[in-house]
Amino acid sequence: MFRLWNAVLFLFVISIHVASASDIDDRLKAQLLALGFPNGTLPVLVPAFGNYVDSVQVGKLLYLSSAAPQTPAGTFVKGRVPDEVDVDDAITAAKFACVRQVNRMKAALGDLNRVKKIVYISGKIQTQPDFINHTVIVDGCSAFLVNVFGTEVGTHARTVAGMASLSLNVTLEVETIVEVKCK
Image 1 (cartoon, helix red, strand yellow):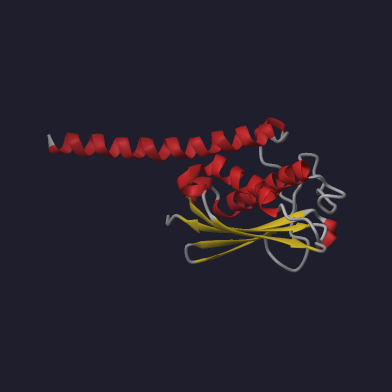
Image 2 (cartoon, one colour):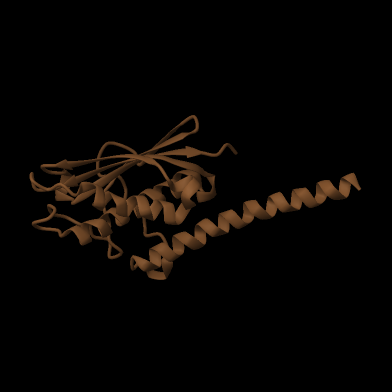
């Protein structure tokens, strides 16, 4: 009887693990489709722009370099909020930046189920000096991460700041720190 109970418990735990992995993939696909990414698949990851790498893992933490918003067409969203890019488009741009971060997570870890926790994001937005709604824009990225990873894993700490300019005139960039599950 004890062996039977252990076998049932083992199968239950395995089924939860497999279900959560496919749930993440299904939720990611739904989010990508909603944003216009063909077939709900992650785009080709554009290499780093300079003398740096996309990610570095130190212990259980994965540090992701800042990501600019790349559209489904492969172009980057550029311009200052709100005079060149309106707030709604900037919210979508924040989601595009998070798509790049999820893509980097997958490239670094091989499997998004290895993400234990989105620990922290930092959003920097190119804005007019009198703009005050930075939080609303980066909420797009935060919502994307929670929608993909669920509340327990996707909810994170964050900072948001307005900038006079950003590299290559991109509208915004997002940095991310992720806790990784041990193998």
